[in-house]
Length: 426
Ligand code: SDX
Image (cartoon, rainbow, N blue to C red; front, side):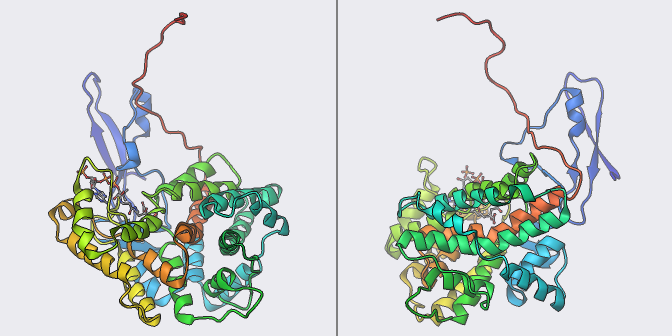
């Protein structure tokens, strides 16, 4: 219920337009502008910089303070005390699970990890050097073909089954993308292993020898999944919500999220960070790249830096940096040259007025790639890992959208093209 009002006067309009103002549990108030259409007006906000597209209770970000809460829990505390599947439960249900609930949740995920054997044939249509994200978009979208007639999106239980299938099958499909690219046989999931360990087994195991678990790497992998799980109304999540608003099959909606995530301005940045660090090659070249990043005539941007919402450190980047140090120490590669370049780059950028004035800080993608590379995951798989992790965020928002009355999303525009004219042959 609105307890506040905004009043708008527009030149040429006699009346003062009163608009309801809503207050959430925290964060900025929102002005309900829906009445403007009846006055012959639209709002104008390219890139949705100032637009609240929906009401949600899943995740809250305070960009000024560098705060990220899932169900009210700070990401730093979840990274320290929780694990990915527990956060999946939290994002889906709004509360942390009891030990009993968690046991049932984990067991249910484990019982959905295999994909239909027919799925394996999809891969053969791709060249071995196809980008794994291209394969991921196609194969996840194809899951629609296996479940399209068994899903009533207005049925909460059907939505829950769909969530379990996606949480469980994304690691299997991601690992299949990798195995296909290196010409090795697909590894079946092993239900005795924990989620992250099972993923690493499907990535690096093979029929010729038993897979040996490294608990430090498995923990780091789970932490990476957790840190990428959800992030409010980012580009890919907004894409999933918009696709879902037409009533599309949830697997097709998740495929649309994967496609949106792939861009280097979004989830593709982790792959771009590694490519950038490798291109810099040596600390002596950093100044040249900082100069390019600041040059308005040069399209180069410092990948892994900046964020639409965070005007402070991305809290996930701080945890990622700490995890990076832990993994490299475990592997005895504290002197990783790329890490040294990354740390020096961060230090220089954070002292440079251009970045300080624009409040450009390292984001979640800046250190993740160094950890993934140390674990042995190839650069072109980094965004696949991001998509795997973010699936829970996408499906939680998709489910939230369908759990209350909703309308198809249909933005309008400021039209600047030709007005009506009659057809005349040229
Ligand atoms: C993710 O939305 C989410 O929550 C996303 C995400 C999630 O979890 O879902 O957090 C994941 O996508 C993180 C962001 C990953 N992307 C990158 O690291 C790519 C590099 N970053 C930039 O492309 C950029 O910072 C964005 C896209 C992330 C944000 O862009 P904005 O908010 O549209 O900011 P902008 O382009 O308007 O930039 C403001 C100014 C501009 O300079 P001026 O025009 O004022 O002179 O800052 C400059 C930009 O040129 N700028 C950068 C820069 N980022 C912004 N300059 C150099 N290097 C950069 N990285």
